[in-house]
Length: 367
Image (tube, rainbow, N blue to C red):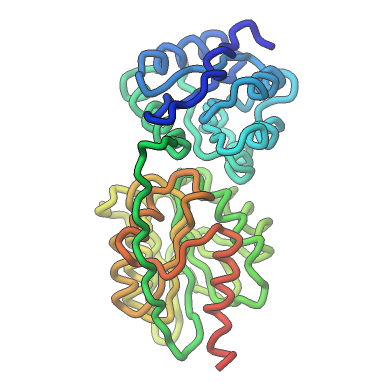
């Protein structure tokens, strides 16, 4: 066990009448980084550091004694390393969220996306010396709160009243296009969904995932492995083909249009209401305009409300929206927005969303 591990803090039970602080563990082989991250987190009244260690092996031993809500994990460390330890960290305590803080988030798309597909909720670049400024501090604390608050419990908390599901819009024709939007925690959910999607579902799939442009080609390869389907990053007027996944580039929105009888996916760069680039809203809106009731939208884990405006347009046009459920979401922000607006016809974990999509795709043939 590392000498810095603060085990006692993790032994304290959560109060039944108030929300306990978010329990954070810092795992990084750099003493300087551990010290700087500690100085950012320690003053926050809604957070407590339950452990600091320089190796994945020590982190796993510490987690067995002091569970953490959020683990800040470096990928490059001696010994086991962060990437190999990630599945073990996630299995150590139900509900633990991993925020990868590593220099590889800038130059190592393969490692970073591998971590995200394995269940890491989000990533941040580990700044070089002198770059731990106020902007970085704010961004780090925002991510920790978004990930850690999903585990807040307490008898005094009044569970929200679940809004009723929207009656599903029905259409006689086949499903023409599926659009999937995701952000924080969404890559893991998306891979799970695609692994469970039956091969007989041939409707083309559009994907908008909040990621940097430099990650997109690696992301496409990752989706191909998960789905067994060809995946392409949209560039210019890209034909939308059955059985293929079409991905929004990191520097533009994915827009669906029809040229004669042919569906095409294009890109455009403009400020979306959500502020996201690419935006799920713009993808859903274009689906509503082009495919109307033959379109199905899916909203997976993510912070914020991107997708809500587009989902409203899609439902008005006769399409349907499925949302990921809270229990399986790393951050139930984007799905919550469409659920609370009464737009979702189903709220399910990713593997069951896959089966619900298959139901939508097959209904016309069953009539």
